[in-house]
Amino acid sequence: MSIFEALMLICFGASWPAAIRKTYVTKNVKGKSRLFAWLVIIGYLCGMIHKILYNFDFVFYLYLADLLLVATDLTLVYIYREKRTNNSVE
Image (tube, rainbow, N blue to C red; front, side, top):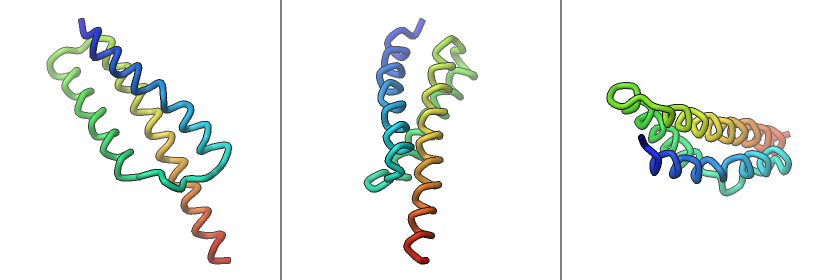
């Protein structure tokens, strides 16, 4: 059982809903790093691959949930950064 790995993922995942909400409500992406988000996504993908190949357990779904949260925030960053760019041109 991967209890400490699960606790780590729960702690990491706990912060993303607040970040997503803030980005969605304010539509402000200033200070958000796309590189950071992509690195986190890659890290979660590597953890998921490890779980699939060597030790599949419920922690895989925590990786998946965290990955979806980060991907949601990253999607908002791309949407609002694009809108901000287009609005400043007009």
